[in-house]
Image (cartoon, rainbow, N blue to C red; front, side):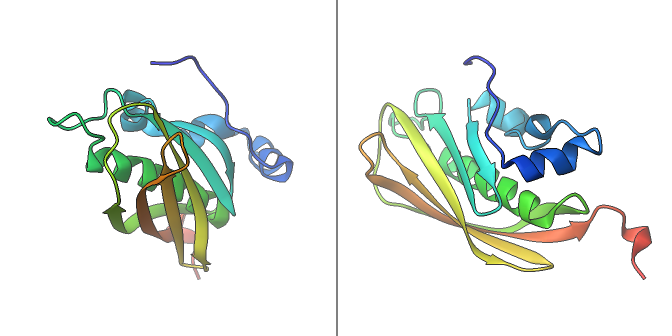
Length: 156
C-alpha cells in the first residue's frame, strides 16, 4: 500500500464538517475495500470527484484489470460525490451501478472522474469515466445513490 494522502476538498465543505468535529478525509475515504485495492481519492467536491487505482493487485486470472475492480472504483467515487451533494444531514446508499468495460489493461494506474448527471433531494446519479495513463477510456459507469436522512426520527 502507498503512503497516507489527503484529498482536496472545497474550503466551504471543509469548514462545514470541521464545525461538527468531523474528519472529512476519513469520512470520505475509499473504506476498507478501497484501501485494500489502493484506491486514492485525490479531489472531492459535489460536482467532481477524482481518484486513482493501480492495475497491479486488481487483476483477474488473465492478467487484465478486473471489471469488479473498476466497479469498486466507480462506486467509491460516485458515492463520495453523492455524499458531498447530500451534505451533513444525508447519507448516500448506492441503489444502481452499471459498468461498460471498453478495453483491457494489464499495468499502470487508472484514473476515475465522477461528474453528476442528476443531483436531487432524494437521489443523485453520477457518471464515472475511468481512463488509463494515456487517457484512453477503460470503463464508463453510472451510479445512482439514494440520499437518506441521517436521523429519520427528525422527519415530520
